Image (cartoon, one colour):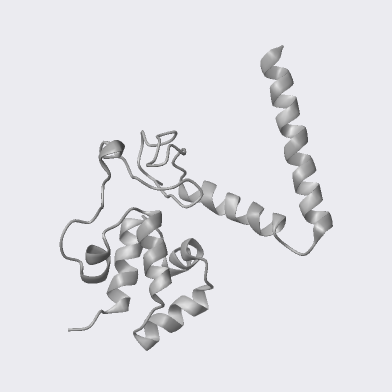
Length: 151
């Protein structure tokens, strides 16, 4: 019995509360076309499955087969999503905003992850002037918030 990757992608969508396959693709860092191609071929690079599993703290057994426990909960999360900031998604789960994940980072929702990803793409791009503009804007913002807080 082999792994049905269309089912894996469907479990990814469900577990991540993602609207469609394109959202899954964004989370794992591939184009929607690449994910669609994986689905059609019935195979998927293992690093994408591992990445998604780590992002959402999902059991690989559950993700691949749909059997067993869905989450791999570390004790220190007390039942909260044990996911790393910058990769987590808790959209639609009230009360988890600002919750601490396994590594003590703040858990982020899908929209926040997408914006952070966009910022990182700009900061890492070859267009140094765009990266400098973003850094400058962030520095100005933080300076103004620090001044407001101390006033």
